[in-house]
Length: 127
Image 1 (tube, rainbow, N blue to C red):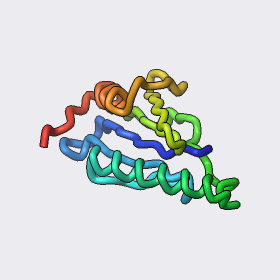
Image 2 (image 1 turned 30 degrees about the vertical axis):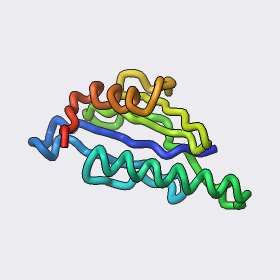
Image 3 (image 1 turned 135 degrees about the vertical axis):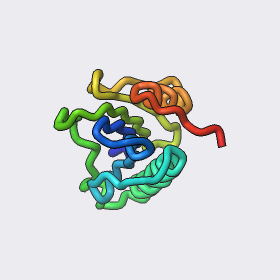
């Protein structure tokens, strides 16, 4: 089953706060969608995971057209990290980053978020 993904990238060529970008992989539209913050990205990722789960439960034929995020490409000088979630009822989280491009299971959502933030040197606000 295809999995939505939250990607955080640090772009060295951009001054803060534009040096950090957030995107969510949508396996339904097969695109990365820009989001304004970590929290917005996590919320969007959860919404998409639920949409995919419902499609699967309802045996929607469109499930066959869903696509996971492509293999990581090293096409720029940015540091990046991704967190993806399964669309199953019992969510499974995995992470990867610019140094380690194979997916690794995270203990929990919070552990996965901490891992990707740490990888790019992003400190979430405590709001």
